[in-house]
Image (cartoon, rainbow, N blue to C red; front, side, top):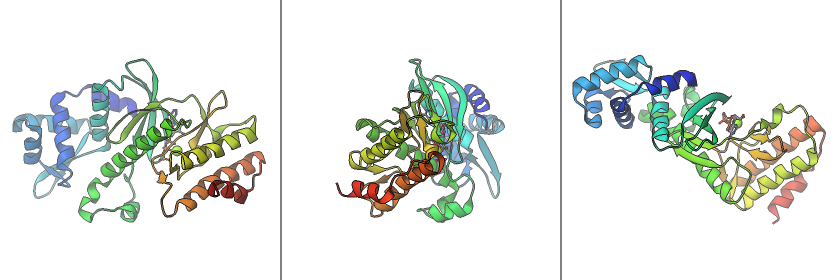
Length: 294
Ligand SMILES: Nc1ncnc2c1ncn2[C@@H]1O[C@H](COP(=O)(O)OP(=O)(O)OP(=O)(O)O)[C@@H](O)[C@H]1O
Ligand SMILES: [Mg+2]
């Protein structure tokens, strides 16, 4: 669902709608399709009100209805978005919403303003929403819980990314300042910058490359973590030519048994990009040695 439509629908919800959505969220930990009795119990509302709210939020496409031996409901991504956005708004972390600023395969990012008037970026993680094969490959939990894998995975990705941003921010690495986190959504400082792969011209290429390598090194040695998906797509360059490394949900701890593999892959993605696009060459092995022989 488009973010503008989502926000318009969110504005129409009242407290009892959130109670029903929250009851569904809880119910989904146990049921694939949550029975009305469970929703009623968890929400603390009477059955008539539950039915009324269910049909209202169903019309808004925040939940889906299933009819089998009984009638059950489950949350859509839009419903889950409403729960998380509502919690962030209520806790004064978010106020006005703006435009989409990035739509990836695994997240939607849009800009917003918090009550203090700061520009923030809101990243909504969206994992496991499609491929069954992918779900099967990566799932650590049982078949029965596959129906909530998207919810669980998206929440976990946001938690991991928020955790990384906090650690990296503490060691003063140039990453967006983390502001808040709820369910599958993180709120962070909005960076004025362009992804590296989109830049037509890059002045001081060698210097920028060195800074990126320094940041990889600081993350690895001080914050003890490795990005794990580093490339020209996940580096923003500000108008002042500062670099900002973004998109950290898949970070790997530096004591991971395969940490060298991930670290080398990150470094080599960057070196290949600089060689291919800017004809700046650095010896991979030399850099690996500098990293590992500290
Ligand atoms: N803090 C931020 N400030 C400004 N723009 C941002 C910020 N975070 C993300 N963006 C924009 O949103 C785009 C997507 O963000 P990000 O790389 O974090 O997610 P993603 O690529 O969709 O995630 P994934 O790789 O998991 O699919 C970025 O390329 C960038 O343009
Ligand atoms: Mg990205």
